[in-house]
Image 1 (cartoon, helix red, strand yellow):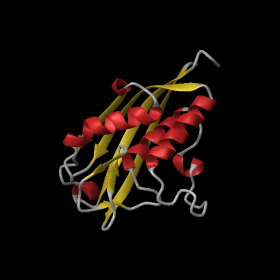
Image 2 (cartoon, one colour):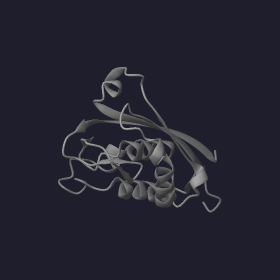
Image 3 (cartoon, one colour):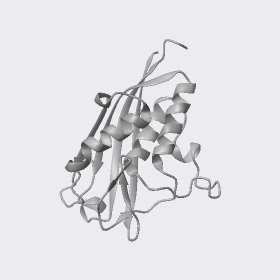
Length: 163
């Protein structure tokens, strides 16, 4: 079968004295997200979707936070690049990705195009292959209470003709 679909989900809570990174770009905000890496919830969801589509488990398996300091504070763009290399090593290419960030705060619309461009560059794909949407949860749940941010990603990958 040449096509495979993957779904990714990630969540991180807000924390003081951290920068907010989403889709590989720094978003101005008074809090960042707590995590072992830079806690880029959008890129983490995308990595999980890609890994799942290729049957390569998940981001925690591929880049464990139990590996001493190897991934501590790491730029998630590095993890995304490594994830795409794992897929290419298995003969897959990204067809498209559809991502949704759930955040009550901050407003993300001004940063969507930058996120798309950044992730497309890291993945070495056309920006038209990357969709990023932002939504709130209408003040419901942990996102609505402004305790954190969640992200979902769905990808379609295709087996390369070279394999």
